[in-house]
Amino acid sequence: MSETFENKKQTPEEQVEYPYSVAVRFKDAAKPYSFGSFSGDIKKGQWVVVETAQGLEMGEVEADAIDLKKYSLRMPQKPIVRLATHRDLQNYAENGAYEDEAFAICNEEIAALGLNMNLLNAQYTLDRSKVLFIYLADQRVDFRELLKKLGARLHCRIELRQIGERDKAKMVGGIGMCGMECCCRRFKSRFDIISINMAKNQLLALNTEKLSGMCGKLMCCLKYEDDEYKELTSGLPKMGSQVEYEGNIYRITNMNVMNEEAKLENHEQVIFISLQDLREKAIPRKGVVMQKRNDGEKKEVIHRTVSRTAEKPTPHVSMELPSVNVKPERRENTNNRNQNRSRNNNANAGSSNNSNSSRSRRRNNDSRRERERTPEKKTETRNVTVRTFGKKKTQENQG
Image 1: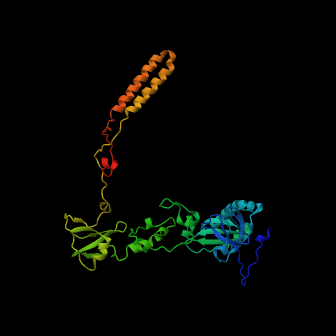
Image 2: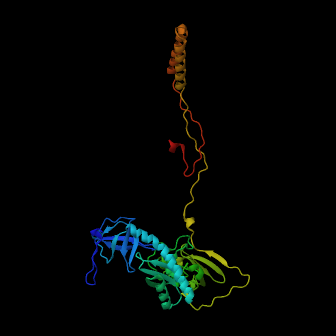
């Protein structure tokens, strides 16, 4: 093996610093992991054997090796052992069949022991010295007897790992209600803390079914816009509270942050005002008893907000049809065509038609003298209708 991949052994006192960092992605992993190397020739798409906490594993290089000194990075990293050989690729392909067999054996033993656990996956290391079983369970499971039976049948080290609902959704994946792949599967590397207050900040209906993702927990996307909604709703009274506006007591029944509109309602009126007026003019009132609306009594609806479309001016559409000057062809062009036609006829006639050609030349000369005596006529104008939209065009502007 090349000396570039011969790594020093790390001791607690001495940490090996690698000059290059390589991003490696494993099978069914949501994100790549960084590993250290002494070689900068590793390219994207190559397969490498790396040392992890589980043992030797093989992964695909996500990007070319980067120089840590160039980017001033310092990070403790596990080493890249070697580039994957033909034997490593063969073992990696064979591990798929061994993992399916181990998965079936583990399910048989779980059913025989009557354990309350849902087995999700089985993963072998590259050298098949260890197998990892991932399972889902609501409570802690006593699997000591299961370990004994699995060790006797598989003849390798056994590890059982329990995960939660969100980790299961990240491992399995799926399509969310937005029509895209789950965020935890597509790009998220860690889970954020999601609370019901984030849904309250966005003025959403507290419907658990609509606010929950595939994992049964609150959706991660509630976290994305929480800061913006906190800023937009700062200084506003709470939904359903009572306020005094223009001397009357109202209850806030609706607020639309995107349209900057709030709905105030009492037994007589329904008023739509802007959020700015709600901040500045509305006074919070607590403990005020509001009158009840009588049966059959209709409320007066008042709009105090200005529509955004009303602020834009209506574009002008001209229905008048202006005239356009069109210059006719001069007579000189027709005379030139006649002259060329007569010359062609004379050339074809030959010497026998010399008398005719002399008469045609005299006729052409007479027409040329007459044209020189008469002054040129002014340009004629014709009215042509053209439909235009926008500003009104006049004949002077076109000129």
